[in-house]
Length: 121
Length: 345
Image 1 (tube, rainbow over the protein chains, first blue to last red):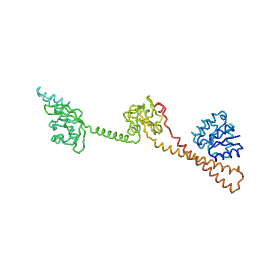
Image 2 (image 1 turned 90 degrees about the vertical axis):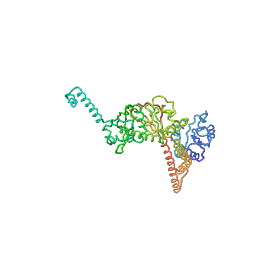
Image 3 (image 1 turned 90 degrees about the horizontal axis):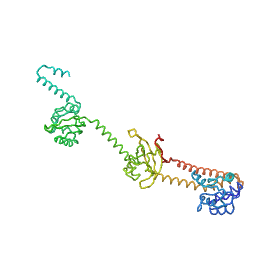
Image 4 (image 1 turned 30 degrees about the vertical axis):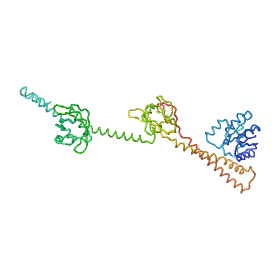
């Protein structure tokens, strides 16, 4: 399974890479911005995109809409990663069309299995 | 009647019989005059009583000779003398007095309200008058007036807006605080639907009682079109005639709401900002503690476990702050959908 992690925080990407790669045995590619994420999604065609909501410039929602608009990335399952845990925020993200929402801080030992479970549904 | 029969049967000629009848009629009139519980008097336009019945003595506490010797103005309350003089001047011109009230001073210092009816006989300079003691009624009126003034003063000085409506939600009264709150004089609101205070085109005869019996929060509209957050308590009352009326007590809580919003935003921002570094710390320590990154010696493993345990604690603290914030979101909100009064009974 190849997962694209899109987050402007290098440390979060580092932890996600270890959690998904070393713990979950997944293949991980990383992008530090929405634009970079879109380019990587088009070129590398990951099985899943873990997309941070709050990023400077193109935020998670804008990146999501771009990915959905492009035929080559439209079908890739997208899981949002957010620091906001309010019910209204989670509902907003689900309504946007996300496959699932994972709230920060995530458990590094179970992140990969969570993603796997989401992809299998 | 017994006396009458004995007089009528007195032997004698016709003149004697008529004289007896006349004496009896005078006796009867005198008795009527003396026994009357109302005050009966004959007064002169010169300002003196000429004849008074005993009811005057009973009421005012003066002997009749005391009342006859002095001008009756002496017994009239100082505040009512001018009006009494004017009334006497009317009587001198032959004007009848109907429902003229003034206060008389009693011998014990108390005051009695008298309601007068009088007919002048101008040719003789006399006034035939009756008076009725209305002191109790006047005092009750005064007590009621004071009570109303007190209630009015409370309503006028309320810091919250108070608007009352009839059973159909038409505005009946608006206190000064509500006038200020809505920027509109009471006259412009009375008779209109209370719905206009909430910016609705609402002119049916159905009041909105969703907020009845509870405190709710909603948006209200000033006359200049500016919207503000309003805390509203609506209650029902009986105006004394069995009809349902409603009163709405309103507070402009825009400022309080703004402070609350800033506080919520601050708490949310701080807690959200904390989550990003926590993700790295908690994640890194979790990976180390799990052994995924390689075996640690006992001492290092212990140090990492302490750090990891406390990062978990920190995560739960941040979550608790956000949970508190969620509680704030559950405030009741004013629902202004139409509803009939019957459904709320």
